Structures are given as C-alpha cells and as structure tokens.
Image 1 (spheres, rainbow, N blue to C red):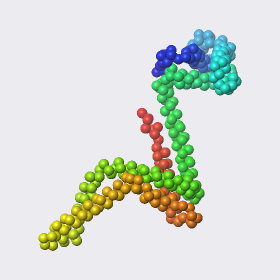
Image 2 (image 1 turned 90 degrees about the vertical axis):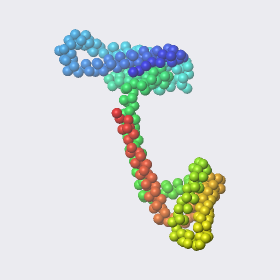
Image 3 (image 1 turned 120 degrees about the horizontal axis):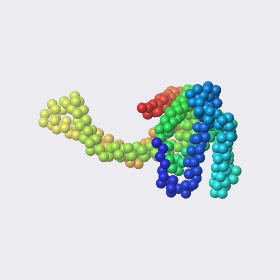
Image 4 (image 1 turned 135 degrees about the horizontal axis):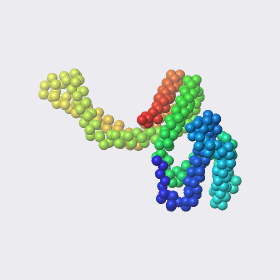
Amino acid sequence: MLHINREKLKSSHQLIWFVIDFLMLGLLILNLSFIVWDSMYGFIAVQRLLEAHLPALQAAYHPIHERFIFYDLLFVAVFLTEFFVRWGYAIRAKVYDRWYFYPFIHWYDLIGCIPVGSLRFLRILRVISIVYRLHQYQIIDITNTRLYRFLNFYYEAFMEELSDRIVLKVLTGIQDEVRRGSPLFDRIRHEILSPRRDMLADWISERVAQAAREGYVPHRGALRRYLESRVDQAMKQNSELARLNYLPVVGPSIQEALENAVGDIVAQVIHQVLEDLASNANHGFIEDIVHVFLPERDGRPEGEAQNQALIELILEIIDAIKGQVRVKHWRAELP
C-alpha cells in the first residue's frame, strides 16, 4: 500500500508543486486509462460485444470515441499549461544554467503531448518521473509497494543474469589471452608490481607483524607448554635416548636434563621467531621474499616452467572467480 507522508508534505517549501504533482498524477492515470479503453473500443469485435450485452454503454460511448481527439486535446491542454508554468518557474528560480534547457531535459513531457497513437503512451514516462520525484522528497515511499518489490526483483534478476554473462565472457577472454602468452601479465609484473616492491614489502611486513601480535602474543604461554609437551613426547619415543636409562645412577637424570634442554631450546627458537615477526625486525625477511618473487628485470629470459606455473595459477584463480560469478543470488530470494 502506498502511503503519503503528510508531515513531509506540510513542512515542505514546495507544497504547491507537490499538490500539482498529485493532481497531474491523477489526470495522467485517468488519461492513460481513457487511451487504453478507447484503443480497445476501436476493435469492431469489442464494439459488437458491447452492443450485444451493454447497448446503453455502447450508445453512450460511441460519440465520445468518434470525438476522441477532441477529448484527448483537453487533457493535452492541461498538461501543456502545467509544462509552461513549470518552465517559467524554472527560468525565474534559475534551476538550470540556461533558460532553454528545461524542454530538452523534460522532452518526454512535450513528446507525450503529441496526439498521435503510440506517442500518447509516452505519458507513462511522466507518471514515472512524478512518482520518482515524490519518492526522492520522501513524500511517498514506493519501496513498500508490492508492485515495486515485484518489478525490482525481476529487474535485479535480469541485471544479475546480464552482468554475469558479461563478466564470464570477459574472464574467458582473459583466459584465452593468458593461454596465448599475452604480454599483459608480464607488464603487470614488471611495470606495476616490481616498481612497488618496497611498498608491498612494507604492507606485507605490517600485516604479518599484526597477525603475529594478535595470534601469538596473547597465547605464548599455551604455545610454549604445547611445544614442550610435544618435544618431551617425541624424545621419550626416541630409542637412542631411551638407552640412557640403562646407565647406572646418572642415566635418568641425563635423559630428563636433555628433554628439558631440548624442549626449552625449541620453545625459545619458536618464541624468538614469532617475536621477530611481531616486530619491525621482520621487514628485511619480508623484503627478501618480495624480491625473490618480484626480481629486478635484468634481460635474462625466465624459465619456461616458471612461466607455465604462473599461467596455471592465474587460470585457476580466474576459474574460481567464474565459479563464484555463476552463483545466482536472486534465486535464493525466490519464495
């Protein structure tokens, strides 16, 4: 159901124009209904059907049908009057940069007033423009109507289907370019990524440090206990260390000392590595990795296996994107 926001209507500085909009909307709907009915009445079969079942209605309307142009021109006169009044207001209020812009911007208002068959139905555009304007000013809310939800659902479904086909076509074309050895990805690598290696290294370094700080630092105690328990279990299962138990007096002590020492060393090494990753000390390590993946261009040809691996990686990524594009989200909204 379409509701009118009376508070917005009363508080608006354009109250008179909104009232005119509602009046024109009513006249347009009445005029379009009149046009549709007269078009139907123009068929001989409809006239004979009315003459057989509703002779009074047929007799009353037939003179109107013969003078349809005259009655339609009465509506046109009202529409043109309102058009020129709004044009004058636009000139006075300097709504547009030039005084003659208004009829070009509102061309559908003028063309719809031409009393020629198919052009009359362009008046529906004026209905749409009025409804849209009222919605923009929050005088009415068309999003709550069943008609809007129905049309919007199928519009979104159509646009999703159309855009998906376009995207799939583009991605398939990119895959063909990659398979043919297009220089595009060499350009991306050497002209876009390589000059930004330092920026990429800084960004990756910061992200790794943040991940280490948030993932490791709050749980370092639990991780240390876990590592020590795993090392202790692994050493107890080692047959070489198990022989130390056969040494008289000092064997068990030596085995326990070794277990504690190795567990502490492993935990300390892991702790130090993660501490370094969580600090700015990881920058040099990350920078070396980035330089390995994005080496400076020295004119030497790259390995065929490396290029093929890169091509396969790119193709698999595009296939994954195409698989996601094929998902029809609008179907999930079907009742």
